[in-house]
Length: 160
Image 1 (cartoon, helix red, strand yellow):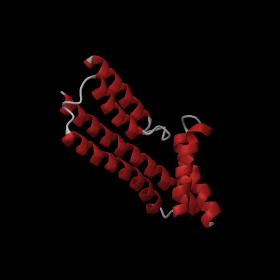
Image 2: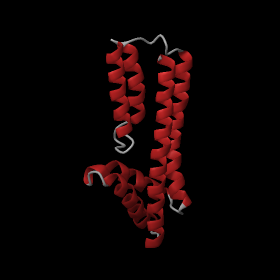
Image 3: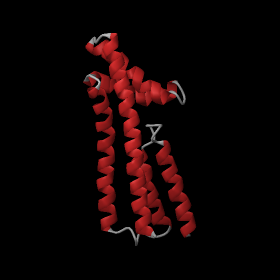
Image 4: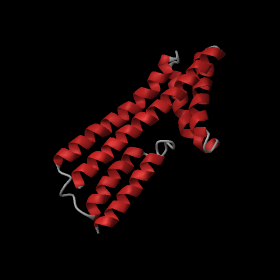
């Protein structure tokens, strides 16, 4: 039964990594779901309280890193809160409107449109905000991927 537990966990982890580029997939839930599914199919014996505390801390770090990287990118390039909201909305809808490329174009255009409509910023400043949102998004993807790899590494350490 252990091999089935590993296959299920790895599939959940793979979906979590897909969630890095498709933000409608809650990556952290699939990571934790992989841990839980492994425990249900095999055993929770090796995943004691220390394991769960460590994973909880990394989960909090994952949420914080995601939010901070996006906002940092926008603020660093002179964008406003409206640019941040526009970027987030573009990130959620972009992949559905423009498959594949929408993950990059959505936040960029969302930040630009929000800056132009809400703050009435000039086009040059709106472009800077859009570039900041794109850099923030790409930074957050890299940071989240590293954190997720560490979480999976800790899981492997504990269960093997």
